Length: 104
Image (cartoon, helix red, strand yellow):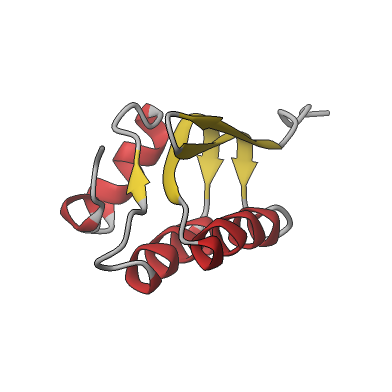
């Protein structure tokens, strides 16, 4: 039986920015937690850095959360850390959304 990596999301504050760090799999079951965390900080007007370097898998629901957060935050402070995992970078390249992401 395949053992899935645990999903974890945490937020920490550094120099006025909030870093949301995600690890494990972002899929239909876990993407609502990511959406809620991003929305909370977006409503507060907080500058957010999304660290996806620990993400081992992301499906279309995770991609949808990411793109929706960027769209909702255009002109604001949402940024995505450039050290996203190779898996996430590949997904963004395959879907043609890599250049849409505002890399920090």
